[in-house]
Image (tube, rainbow, N blue to C red; front, side, top):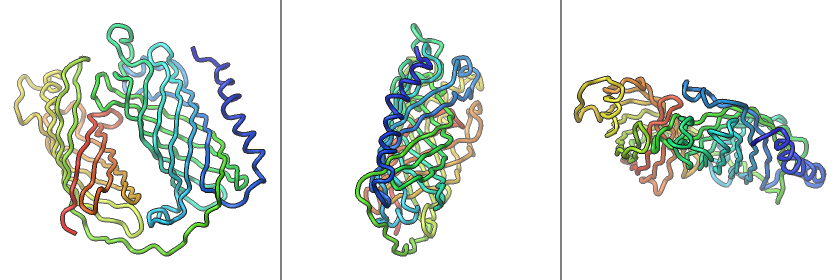
Length: 371
C-alpha cells in the first residue's frame, strides 16, 4: 500500500541525490549544454469525467518522472522556427490514489519541449505520447469496480505547461501544470479512460558540450494550399466486456496551408466507417433496427499542425454532418502524429475522441496530391 513514508523514500533516493549533484556542478560549467536530465515530482488528482469514474476516486495521485533530453542547435529550419526546443524521452511512475482498484501506472514516452519566451524565467510547453501500463485494469471476476480502463497496456498522452528558472548554466528549477491521459482507444472495454491533472516541481541538470546555436535567417516556406488524402484502420469493442472486435475505417481529405515560419492550419473532411455503431445504437435504445447507413459518420474539422521537420502533431476539432448515433454528441476530436516517408507519402497514427472519452485508435497512410 502506498504511504507518506513511501513518498519520503522516493524523494530521499530520487530527487534529493539529483539536487545534490546539481549543487556540486552549479558553478562548474558555462553556456548551454547539449544534454540534460530532469527529475519531476507530480501531485494531483483523477478527473471524474463520468460518474462511474468518480466511484473509484479515493485519494490524490503522486508521480515521479525522470526525463532525458537533447538540446537542438538550429541545424534544421524547424528548430530555429520553434526557438530551439528540446527533444527527449521520459519514464514515469504513477500512484493513482486507489491501490485496490487501480494500483500503479507506469509510462514511457517521447516528447518535444517548446520554449514560449526567451527570458530568465522561461515558459515552456512539453508535449509527448507513448506507452502506459496500468497495474490493475478491469476484470469481471476480480476487479469489476474499475470501469475506467480495461487493459494493462494503453496509449499515454502527456502535456505540461510550466516554467524553468535558470539558476546557472548547469542548474534549472521548474514548476508546472500537467494533464496526463491513459486510454486504449476502446480496443478493450471498459475504456472511459484515466485523466489526471497535477501540479509539479522539478530540477534539471545540464551537461555535455556547449554547442553554439545557429542563427541563420529562416527561409520562407512554400505557403500554397496542400491537398492530402488519408485512409486509416482500427478496431474497437462495445459493452459488455470481452466481446468481439469491430472494424473501423476512416477516409479523410485535408486542405492544409503552411504558415510562414512554423506550423500549418486547415480543414478536414472525414468519413468514418465504424461497424460497432449499429450495436451501440441498439444498446442505447436509439433505434429498434439498424442498417448499413448507421455504420457511417461524416464530419468536418478544423486542424492545426505543429510541424517538426518530418514529424507533425495534428490537433483536430470537428463536428458530424451526418450520424445516427447521438449518444456521444455531435462533436469529435482527433490527435494525430504524421511521419513523412517522402515529399508525398506520410504515415499516420491517431486517437479519435469525444471530449475526454476515446472512440478508437487508427493507423494509416496518406498522400499529398500535386506539388
